[in-house]
Length: 246
Image 1 (cartoon, rainbow, N blue to C red):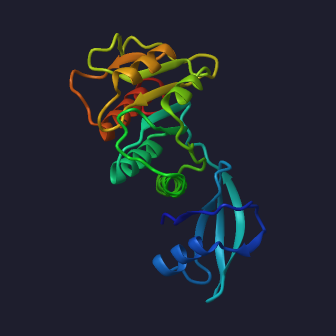
Image 2: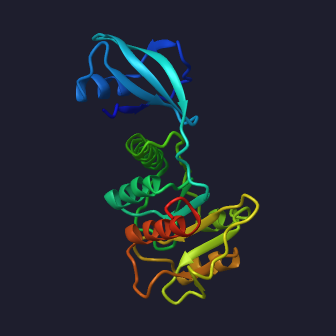
């Protein structure tokens, strides 16, 4: 029987007993109806799964005992970064969730010229916290024990210029100069960065910024893909060619 996995943002170690954070306790005891003596798997993003048992369930707290740990090897050998023009609502959640399931290492939301979502500082903090919770939930479901980074959204030019360590920098383009079959694998531990525009696509100015920062157009079929399809299709294709979906 598959045990429930639950993220806790705390140091974990075998033989440790502690009170679960409120969110985790509510999920395990109120949503999933776990009781004293039931087992679950905890993780905190350090690459380990921790077998644990609920030792007490009370109104004020839920105590859990960590029994053992196990190294989890589910990370892709291909280090992928997704630069994603911010999309609206559920579209952005879908992108984050599925990109995590497909093995993305880092997600960098960006404000592009045609980004339709305008957020002030307070709303932006809440939105980024929500995005990170989506990624954590996707890790719980997919069995990942390392959590992809989700960064605060900078202007596109700042995100593009920060990609110097990427061996390949790609933006999807039905008439792009590069094909999937013509790509060479990244070398020396470097990764691949994929840039996907928002609902309105990259503006001419956005494209100039990306091309000036070393990005090249990648043909992934002749059709124009929606923002919630494009990045996921590219991640799956690159993982199939260079990663662990082969």
